[in-house]
Length: 228
Image 1 (spheres, helix red, strand yellow):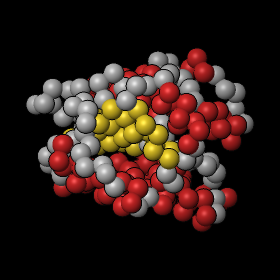
Image 2: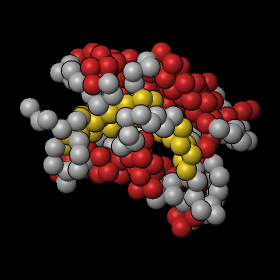
Image 3: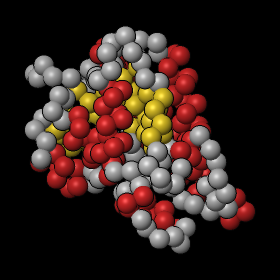
């Protein structure tokens, strides 16, 4: 068995999750979670010590986490966003957004708590500027991210032996952001957005902090770019 610490990253097949996986790889064995097994395998191919963990996060069970007895880092990076004004957003959008962005996070964390406790581990939640400020057309997504912030705050207090960090990035140059700009009917301007690696560096600042330091919240904004 490897003596290196182990990290599990969700949403690891692309974008911010994949960047975090690459940042963690030099010092960690990795489990890379997501629905697209083929995409996960491609990421793992370039990362020694990485294994795909294909799973539907909204239906994760104890069987899915069987064998994970010790976990040093859990990074929640998976998420969905559907824009729309409140008057135009049906219940199924709210339910899906909350299910992926909040309920799946809470359940996976719950199932992995024994492994995290065994390692005195760390939970990192990739939130959003929308978890700090709600804007018109973003109600369902912002509500899920405000809820995710509350979950992190409660987890931090309930599990004092764990470090719990919330990262609030601004807009990031990812496929997800392309989808957002399409929903906004806006021009995609990657030079105005954060690089995924920049978010990964913020995560690494929290993970590599000295034992006496607990980075509870990190806000990262594009230089001169949009705030949320």
